[in-house]
Amino acid sequence: DALRSVLTGGGRTPAQGALAWLWARSPRTVPIPGFRTVAQAEENAGALAHGPLTEGELAEVEGILGRP
Image 1 (cartoon, rainbow, N blue to C red):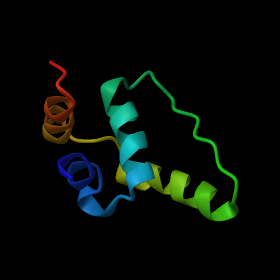
Image 2: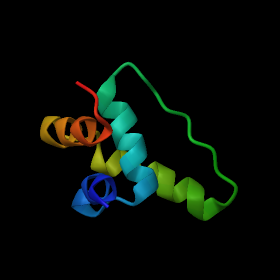
Image 3: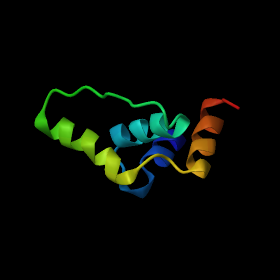
């Protein structure tokens, strides 16, 4: 799956990739992910270590999704 491949690049989990995508789309957006376990909270917090998607990754995701 091409989308999963881009989002999980750099060692991100799929959840971290989704957060990185939201963050990259607008630096003024602060996603507030839900969680049910401590492990999920830790995974979500780990997205901060990776930062937002790069411009190239964002363009690739937007292309896969069919967005300009």
